[in-house]
Amino acid sequence: MNLFDVYNLYDVTPVRAQGCHLWDDKNKEYLDLYGGHAVISIGHSHPKYIAAITEQLNKIGFYSNSVTNPLQQELATKLGEMSGYDDYSLFLVNSGAEANENALKLASFHTGRNRVIAFHKSFHGRTSGAVAVTDNPSIGSPYNRGHKVTFVDMGDLDLIEKELAKRSVAAVIIEGIQGCGGVHIPTDDFMRSLQRLCHTYGTMLIVDEVQSGYGRTGKFFAHQWAGIKADLVTMGKGIANGFPCAGVLISPEIEAVKGRLGTTFGGNYLAMAAAISTLDVMKEERLIDNARRVGDWLKEHIPSSPRIKTVRGRGLMIGIEFREPVAPIRKKLLYDKRIFTGVAGMNIIRLLPPLCLSQDEAVHFVSEFRQVIQ
Image 1 (tube, helix red, strand yellow):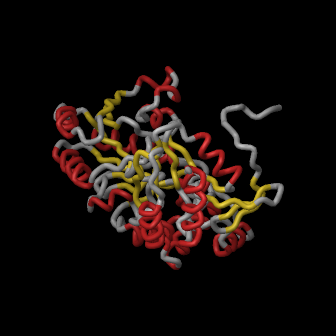
Image 2 (tube, rainbow, N blue to C red):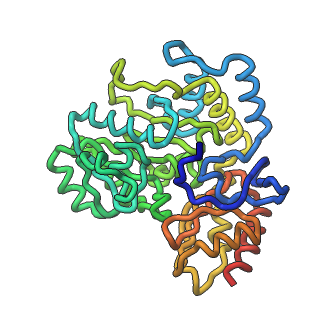
């Protein structure tokens, strides 16, 4: 049997990792500025993370959500304290797409409505409801096209209000920062106006922080730069530093009804051990502050070039938009300079490193990047 061939693979086989570095099966060392797609938040193979999972596995690795798991409440308490959402509830799942699916369902249950407003260039996942609110027809099948979704341009408050005034929209879903769409940042004024309109017309505001959350932008969630609270906040990727885990933060006004939501693996013992240790390390090592400080330095020092159109982002979520396709540049960075980077579309290099990226590692990247683009 072969693997289903759906990924474009680079000819690199990582076999071990530490901090912001990877080593392949030929013992070549790489600097990781991709973080496994914004997943590695506290760094690879952090000793406290390894110890927490190992200790938990020696006790109990799994049982269903039909029993009490005190680790779930421990995570909820710590997450509430660190994020500022301590009056919200937490529903635990396994992936960002699953978190968005459940947030959309909750909004529809709560409002009794069946329409959603989403944004051009958005990405919310590949499962049925999540892909329906994703602005990429190539990854949605005919089966996914029955959802009632209206796509609008980010910033178009007039059209948004026109649609909300119909009072049939259950939710507006927006990314804290659009990741796959090219690291596009909604303005703080727009986010504040969007929250106000949603509240005016009885619509739930869902902020997808799967990629932009968990300290990546220098705040716990990217939308907190605008000083707002969403009705529903979805999380994933960096929540457990590589162990599959995700969640939805749910406003106190949304009623919990037994049987409406459920998951087999969500909130399992190992995921909770991983997620709790991730939060602990983030707090102890002040990684959110580090993401802001090192990210600001990176944006200022990425070299200017006629080939580069713009550099944008917040914290350690940075997009470098070129005037040309970036595939050859990424290959040179990977094979010649041994630096992992991400991509958005054809022309944008995305930097999503672990939040522990050091100043020296940032300096090294800038030096090597300058050589490549020259």
